Image (tube, rainbow, N blue to C red):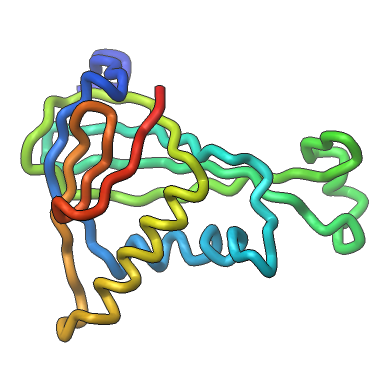
Amino acid sequence: MTNALMSVMSVSDMEIRGSINIRSFLENFACFYHKTSPYVEEIYSRYLRSNLIISSDGCASIFTYYKYVLDEAELDPDVRDDLECENGIFIDTEMVHWCVSVSKANTGKGTFYVYCDDWAALFAYLSTIEEESEEFDVNVEFKIVNGYLIVNNEFELKLYD
């Protein structure tokens, strides 16, 4: 099925169940988590945008974007012209591609936004599970229902259209 034929879903219409590999998630978002550190605070946008594409083979690809502040002193002058600049602050966008295994969902695509601090809390929650686990690779159950991402029926974060 091509993207053009996929139905477009709003967050409130999404009902997805599946699993997330913790190690993969933590590796993919390590740079993001570092940039949200109180000692670094490089994240510019308070919301992360995610584009979700669910295919018929039981996989979902998620492309998550966040904006962060660049150190002007370290910028190459040739790159400077290609960057977004707001109030004298140079901003770049990072994209993280990650996948989830889907056990229940319709094929489709959608876009949702997550509050930056909630995403950092999800990262910390998954880090704790990994640290406490005796297994090398751990998968956790997740679901997206009624505009919320719920992990292991314990951790919940709000998704926005």
